Length: 446
Image 1: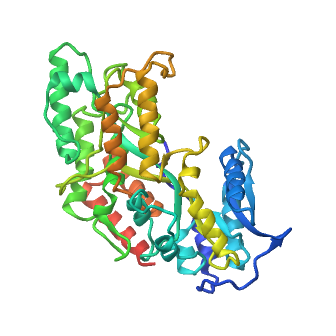
Image 2 (image 1 turned 45 degrees about the vertical axis):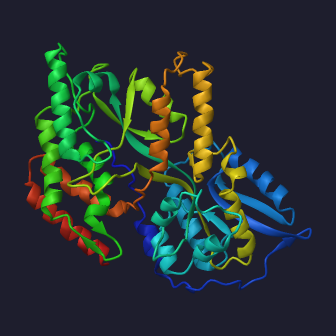
Image 3 (image 1 turned 90 degrees about the vertical axis):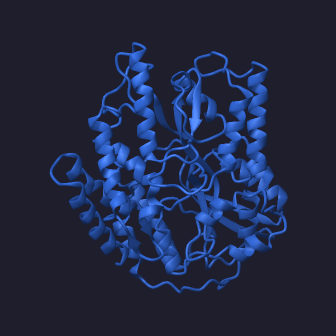
């Protein structure tokens, strides 16, 4: 059984945060200096060439600052058993001591606990007052989605998307009308049934909407895509015992029983859709056009009725925060602001989509020009046949990002553990929903 995505074991780390933090930001100590420059420390989980280039560019722009990178691991260095937990504990200890670095990468660290203890600086006012940043160009929906207690405590370097890639040839041939900007999972089921039926009428021996997809995986996808409909973290409320959630469980099982999805691997050409991560503009082509000759890029469905249009699901990458007790907060913000500048966002070594809309537009335009000239080749060496219309779809999806949701790994873990009793036939969907509701409610109120 594959492990659930996004599950992070942080129990011991969170427990260790019971020690008191000061809860106040301030420059308690004088910033360190070296050869007349202010020393600014940056803690990374793992270094790579991007940060080496970033350090050079940042210091060129700010010659009065000495940026010192402290990476727990070098690029390519393997993580042994228990090392990631050791990294978390080491970082946590530094935060508790009040002597942590000025800026730290906080991916997979217990942010809510850090914020509640006053370990991180609220950057909301700094962001609002910064005249060097164009807020209209910045992906503010993602920044706002990361807020905790209405404060901006973290800033991502970039983000990735998850989309649904469809077999364009089969969808066009079936001529089934649907709008992926507003559809839900019931319409997904209906569309899949119609296309599969027409494919079989044309002689296909087998056809599935999703292959290598047991019902628990589909349920996981559904929950990720609709997490905000069932969890209200600020109110410490959940609604997993609702009819909508029970319906989600039953629908995943039903699609498996009716062979719309299968846990088996399908033959080439016998799969209608693929849930696919898109981690950069280039992967709009490399991933989908490897799967299908004429892929159709779509948004994943949501549960129940949807009001208006929606955007793609977003995952942030390389998220940064400023230590609330940093004596170099002014310099630290200059670094965060530089991360969001066009100069930094255009660095070739940077991974993911840019936090600047204009940079994403430029990267897609450059890719379109390369494809149009025939210079771009797929990994198999063949030229990519991508229409101008498809490039417009790419831009629309990137510009529509509106669905960053902070998925609590503990809630996801509870739902995954308890749901298996339903998918294995041991309990009813209603019984499992109540178990999930009780456990999540208890957790949210701890």
